[in-house]
Length: 473
Image (cartoon, rainbow, N blue to C red; front, side, top):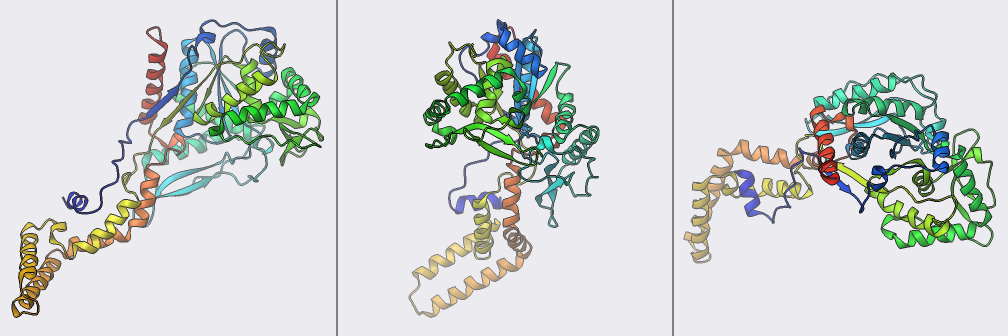
């Protein structure tokens, strides 16, 4: 009742927070996105490319990918969609790992309780060999350290953290940190997916394929035309926020990374300093462009990827042309993402809530209505009305003022506990703001969610795809 009265007597409340207990799945599909999967065929160029990457050429390949981290549930949704579609079309999933990225694959956040019993966050690091700027492919695998003893906010978070550590420990002898993470992710997602074939693709292996070599040669033959086409495409889709390639009279920026021989750094390549191909790898648009040309029959992006890969389509069409011998049409793409939240308290607590808490604590000592004391509230209103009507500087007015002070003294004495609690709530306001933000955070590592929540996410993805595919799904 106190909260209801507070909302009624303070500034307009913030919009209600939607229920956070159920996954919210969003899928974006172009027209006839599934035609290539229904009518699978493959040409010689794609057959060779897939062979060079270790991908099958006898069935459709549904591909998705991400940076080398433990995904959150929104990213997991892409992989669940790839699994569902691979089942439906008797295909295979390909899981791309951006192994030239410099993320730390062995660190993740968990929700804990602070000294006040309020949700906070702690970052667990299972390995100490991360150097910013160093591609994860050149980092050694690790034997993960034991988990710290933490006051986890949820049982599922405690269990999930242990699952992450165990999955990494099971692959401690992997050839690299990238391989270790890829295998650990396969183990972590396995309970959510049946035995649909899946294939790992490391982004840096693209440089070992014929198509990569041929297209890079085209870049070097006329770098200016390539870059101008790239920049024109990027300008068409400003919402993707893709930076243009640098074009100067002396050199042209290429959409490639140079990986240092010692593996500890990556730098942008220009037309005047092209190294040996074994030390290069494709940047984002070029990478997905090659994969959609010949490596898959559907690419599943998140929302951001769908935006930037429209640039890739326009760039490849304008620069290479679909009549070119290298291009036979890019695989379609769809976007899949989801919001799934941990069941943490204070999800509706915002900065506006904190402001109301401070106002409430201050005002409640002067206003019995905020403690839901109807009789004192009515008497206070009567006294205020009588004071307003009494002559100024009169004995009657002074007596009424005294009665008002006595009433408020009685109010504060009889509700000392409630007022103290309101003061405590106001003092905790900043911590509660953080707790509210953490409860509305969709980016916790997916193993921290309960099995039941992840199953609901999987089923929601499947249901939406089934509806899109029609009655035969």
